[in-house]
Length: 481
Ligand code: C2E
Ligand code: MG
Ligand code: MG
Image 1 (cartoon, rainbow, N blue to C red):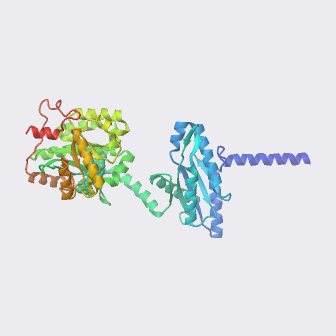
Image 2: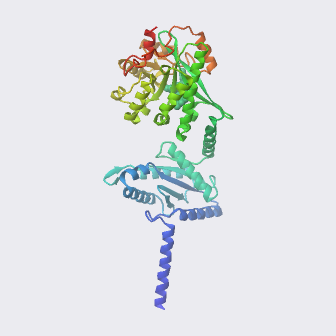
Image 3: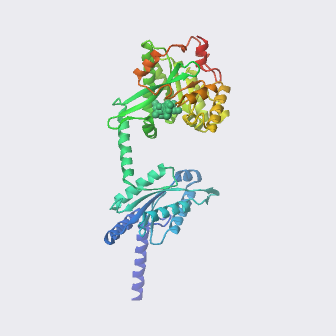
C-alpha cells in the first residue's frame, strides 16, 4: 500500500512538473503567455463578481535588440532574468508578473484600483528597471516603456485589455521611451487616424492630391527674388489641406517619402520651366530632401530624370539637406553630395544650427548655402543669445564662402538686424508666404528685374561651377551681368 502511495505521489509530482513547464517560461520562470491569459481571465471573473477594478501593465524593454545584438544572446538572457527578478521583487506576491515572449512582460495589479496608485507603481517599476547592471563586463542601463489598461473602463475581456495596454505601450515608446502611458479613447482614435491617414497617404499620389507651394527668397541688398523654395501640400479629401509637418513624419516612417519626393522633384522642375516658357525670368528652385530619400540608392537617378524630363538647367536647382542627414554617414554623404554638385546643382543646409555638425566636417561637404533656422530668427533682435548665434552663423558661413539665408523672417526689426550683420538673403512671411504657382508667377511678374541668374549654364560653366568653398552661383550670376 505504501509502495502504491509513493508511485501515485511520484505521478502527481511528474504531472505537476509537466504542467509547470507548459505554463511557465523556462528562462525567467515567470508564467508564460498561455498562463497569463488564464490568470487574466480569472482576474476578470473575480473583479466582475465582486465589482472590483484592476490594472494591466504592458512592459517592453527599450533597445533590447541593440543589447542582444551587440553583447550577445547570453547577455540578453541574463538581462531578461534580471528584469524578471526586479519586477517580481518590486511587486506584491498577489500581483501577477508574466513574460509574453521576447522582451515583453506583463503585470496584473489585482488589488490596485486607483489610478494614482497605478501611476505610482508604474513610476516605481521604471525606476527599479533603469538601475544599472553589469552585462559581460559592461555597465548597462536598460529602460522600459509601460502601457496601462484599466478594467473595466478600458476593456472587459482578455483580448481587449491586452490589446489596449499594448497600444498604450507603443505610444509610451513614441513619447521617447522610459515612460508610461494610460490607454485612453483618444489613443484609440489616434491610432485609427494614423491607420486611415497611412492608407490615404498611400493613395494620395495616384489620386493627384499633392501640390507644391512656392516661397520666394529675397536678396537682402536689392530686395529682389533670387529663388523659390518648393513646399509640399496635401489636400486630404476630408481633412482639407495638410501641412508637411502633419504627414512627412508618417511618409518618412513608411518609406512613402521616396515616391512622394520623386514627384516633388519632377513637379518643381516642370513648374520652373513652365514659368520660364511664359516669359518669366528664371529663378532658382529649392527642393527639400528627406533623410530617407537621401539614403535612397535611386536619388541621383531621380534627380537626373526630373531635370531631363523638364529640361531645367541644373544650376537652377538647389537641394536642401539637414545637418543630421549628412552627419549620419559622412563618407557616404560626401560621395552623394559630390555627385550632386558635379552636376552643377547647388546644395543648402536647411534648419542650420538645430542639428549636430562639426565645423571641420562641414568643410568637406560641397555646400554653398546655409539657412539659419527659424528658431534663431524668431526672437531677434531682442534675445541676446539668438543675436550671438545668428551673428556667428553668418560670419562662419561667410568665412567658408557660403551664401547665408535667414528663414522665417516676419518683422522689419528682424530684417534690419540680419541686414546689418550682412546676411545675404531672407525668406519669410514678411516678404511672402508660400504661394500657389499662379500667385507666385504674378509676384515674379510684378517684381522689377534687377538681378537675373543665367538661364542655361554657359559653355564650360559647369566645370567652373563653385568648387568647394568658392563663390556661390548667385554671386557669379551677378558678376556676369
Ligand atoms: P523648411 O524646409 O524649413 O521650410 C520652411 C517652413 O517654414 C515652411 O513650412 C514655411 O511655410 C515656413 N515658414 C516660412 N516663412 C515663415 C515665417 O515667416 N514664419 C513661420 N512661422 N513659418 C514660416 P511648411 O511648408 O509647413 O514646411 C515644413 C517643413 O516640411 C519644411 O521645413 C521641410 O522640412 C518639410 N517639407 C516641406 N516640403 C517638403 C518636401 O517636398 N519634401 C520634404 N522631404 N520635406 C518637405
Ligand atoms: Mg527647406
Ligand atoms: Mg528650414
